[in-house]
Length: 85
Image 1 (cartoon, rainbow, N blue to C red):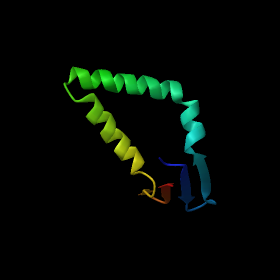
Image 2: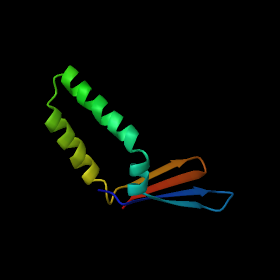
Image 3: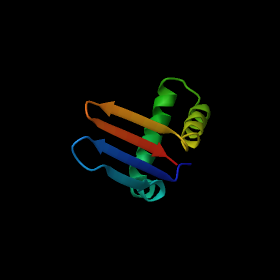
Image 4: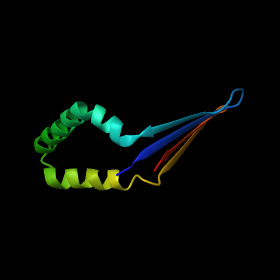
């Protein structure tokens, strides 16, 4: 499970912005929303006849594989780097 998300925004005419977001406190703060999303996902799996256990297992494997991922986005003179640790 990811522990920290680092976001760095580089702008050509200004100083870069660094933001470090700890995942656990954010997850705990958003726990009611997470519960609603999981319930909605289970209902969607039942409606579309998808194995609930397999779908939740696949989602967990994707979340577990996130540490070490980096996303670089560039547009015009602005660059955004998101690193998941």
